[in-house]
Image (cartoon, rainbow, N blue to C red; front, top):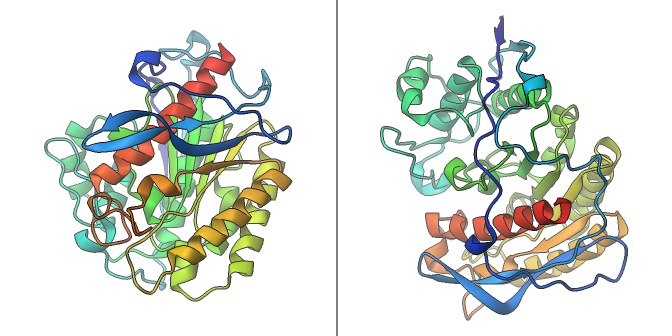
Length: 354
């Protein structure tokens, strides 16, 4: 079936992050024309009970086509948003594993919403689309009854791909002059709490639980019509869990960056370091080696590298226990750490434009 949905004109709310809310940003000149973001010990800020270092970064000259002036409300010229003709996802035989709270770490939602599985998150996002909005901007108070009214069934990987494509299509048709950032990856990105995303712009979450670097590579076209300022990429941990080689992961990353660069020439593409784990079968030493190679790939392919690996490690080099729910997925405090990095990046880009 096909149903028209309208992307509400009032999606963009809030202003740029004030300087007082963030730690000092020291600038280090990169070795090449692109820039490298590395998280080092230096001036620090406290998120919850954790000590968070500041982002040590440098920025290239930004094209005026890549960053338009940030608006606090929808421009008058964008009030008449065209309708979005959306096809609802079809049922697929490729059933995803059952997703539970312990395995996926669903992030606590505002009052009235309690998500305990990937299925609930999926139907909440589908319900938001039915209201003509993207779930990262919808009024959460109205979502409970909406998603509960939709028929429930076991979801598949193809269902999630279809949903993410619908959200990307809605953003592409309704973005107007609004700024946009995209998260793409696996469950770590998928479960990033929407209320923790930096304010002042639209966010499109393209994470799917259990996805691999090869899966990400195959679905980049879903948001090719959007006009993002920044694309954040994090994948690879599920490749390691499935036994894929380092070379296969690195080849996929190189292809991901090349295709993103081709489709979004004015966009800042940020390769994020793969995070550590507390799982005995996953070697953090191996993850660090892959991250070292990802740094080189980012430089060679004209992308940027964000190193947040060390922010998440304890004295033994494992994922800090307070930052995870099961040794792999992030707790609320873990997302606070990640959010701090994104806030600094988004703020720095805004300051660069101003």
